[in-house]
Length: 319
Image (cartoon, rainbow, N blue to C red; front, side):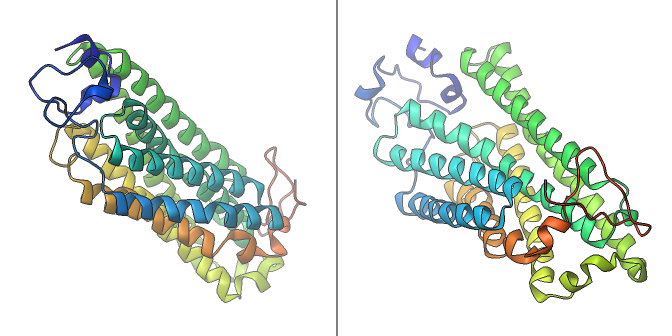
């Protein structure tokens, strides 16, 4: 194994050919080196994902600024930018399959991106709770945001730290193994966070359904709109698709990048790119600014708490 191979960082996780590889990766051919991904990415499929995420970005910027949905805007914009960069890097790997920088770029961006999208969903739940009434929820709206965004941040830190350790460790070393396990822990944290989120959503939905007569009357007109019901469905779809994607990535990384699953690009296209396209398109098509309209401000909450109505609803001005 040459020094160049030892310096490849995360690329070491990809199975390589047994023969010596050139020190200068720009000199690689398919006869002398193994592609960074273990395969050459499909140009059409990756271009499609890049086009979708890139197209959704200006739409979200427009809607977010117009409706002043700042938290949602940051989450969606961050996620879409990272997804677009990641698939741009994969497109580059189609023509330059031995390019290490593009390999690292697509790993980092496509791993981190969904955490931003999850944050947008978590912030939406806080406002949904206000629309029906805090009294039906086990947690205050601000607690949902603080709790789950903290989980997101912890998952990001674990994945970044694990990637750094794997990048500096020799193949098969304890440092690299620790790095891989740390990355798995970060992805597992995302899965746990989403599971807990779905559980609390179901608990709130069940409690609110049993107490329909006590719903906050302030937002009765909002709840009667068809677009509101569509928004609730979108939150369910987006959460479920991101959850499927996160489970897939945990299994993929646990099996190793030399596994059949890691080398199966159709699985990646469906369970990674496909799931996130569904989530992002849905969250954009039924944007919270469109769903809430003039109620977006009155469905706000204060991070430091605020007065509660007797039915549990909170109506505070936009912060």
